[in-house]
Length: 455
Ligand code: UD1
Ligand code: MG
Image (cartoon, rainbow, N blue to C red):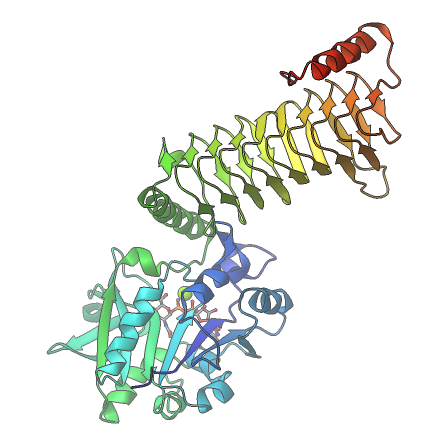
């Protein structure tokens, strides 16, 4: 038997007025990823070619949303709903996609980021066993505002929107989560029959249930937890969803063997990846695009975004790794060090109080306390290249563009504006006192084949 094909339509045309933001609602983030990206990530995987098509309905002025869609799921088709006339009207904006006739039509909302792939699979299983419509339901602690599921004799017979519900119906706590699945061959026929005879004059997708039943199709409820279907309408709800998601990510990290000493103080991103035996100390914030390899330790109060951390590397306490940072195996980044667009090869040490940006640092180099790569001249950014095994003395400014050769020694307090050849001793613009002595002593030690210590 061949696998069933699917079309998932995500509705995201809403303005999200209650967020009180100039940004479209679905672009707000949970765990470093847009609400929309979470939903698209949970939808059945694949492309239209492999039988898992994806469509998103957005508002007319939502260029930024369209961009986010093509970034996360380039295969997804975007449809524009010109007027907001209700959820059924929004679904019909994607009529062309529905008309192609997938076996399963799944509808989800772009502002429900905690939905899981497993739930979509459960709804599809109900269709496979013969249901015409499957609706995701949940028991709401406070059902106010939600559509109520009317169940008779174990069968779903109708959904009533809160605004149109009697006091008796409002007492029902089984609510519509908003996610629905339809027999894809009947969906268009059902949804086109939906009218707008209700208090808001909107085309309600929920009316599909009663219509499907009139057509002799069976409707069923698939229940899930309230946490999974939290919709985001306000900043307070966004914060609640963040806390639910963080709890999930911490549990997943612990289950994968990551040591979190105080999990509730560590913030992760949806895409954080961990090797084996990683230790994360309390109060660490990890943004999107971070991978941490085997045996690495992240000490307290570090902030890391779009960075890859090599095996047995050590970061912090109080380190800031900005986008484009790559730490080689065993590299050490100490307190009050900031890195950006910096490749630090294996064994590099930057232990204290430094800024290393737009730089490449060769293996086993030692960057002394207070070293600054002066990457910006007020107009553009320039690169600092440091060869392997170099020693940069404390409080040095490396004025980019500049190349420091492999094995070179920079005397402390130097301001380096010209390239320094391999193995050269450079002491620039600084009194010749102790520093030259330091340079000589370094060379002596090096010729005696002892590696330099400290930074
Ligand atoms: C909807 C359901 C309700 C359910 C609740 C769960 C309907 C009629 N009601 O109500 O039963 O309990 O979700 O959270 O379906 N949208 C569009 N275009 C429109 C209208 C809506 O794209 O014209 C999108 C919104 O951006 C949003 C989703 O559809 O992503 C739901 O719309 P919303 O207005 O939030 O519906 P609710 O009143 O919450
Ligand atoms: Mg809503």
